[in-house]
Image (cartoon, rainbow, N blue to C red; front, side):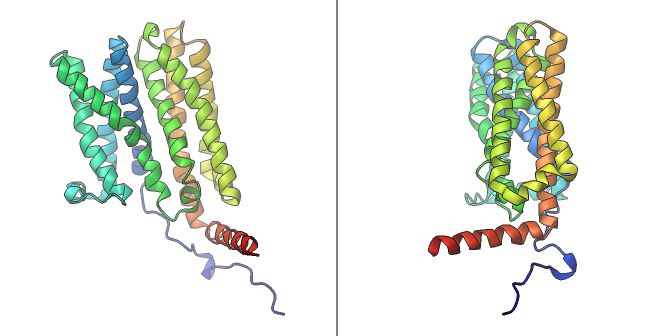
Length: 302
């Protein structure tokens, strides 16, 4: 009998090609898009419940975040002309194509909402733009998870069911942090509740992703990704705890909690990005899960 062959790749080279995306641009794009999209939802809620200062601050922050996110995406594309070329066709099966159209629709809505909110003019137009940005915001905040999971990168594709929930929770944490940092104490009640829910959902989604990934989850616990994600959990929990206990009484505590939540969300996005790159560069994370699936299928057939 010939002994079972052990996996080896040629000269230890990766089996798949790791994405050539810049961490600063694309991980930053993931974070800023989440902040913008979830921020528009909180802005609409603040607008509807008579919290004008928070509503105005969140509209402006969403506009700034989506502007920076678009700039980061265009910078990673290499030439600015490539972005409008992506709008020549809408391909529903392509997350990149759908995402480009989402940005093209969401950006003007967020801009109109921020402009009307800052100037106080055209209130009906501002209300309509706020509602439109709120409707598109959740998709803008989470489609980047679909974009990453649609690749062959093991740490992203393997967690394709949980990644959108993790990105939604992280985006909510960032937006609630911005509301705590920018809004007055008398208006931050909803942001404090959102921060607590976001922290709980973030932890639950991260644990579910690790269970589904199996051995590939090692990339989430080690190296640069592990350090970033541990920092993210600590910051998110500290921010949520501060929001729940102190932010209702102290402006300084609210601002500190908000900054912690923002930093935790950014570390989450950069950590997930780093884990994906690490899993693509190590051939064991590509072949190992494939063999496990083949064994499971063979066992089911037997």
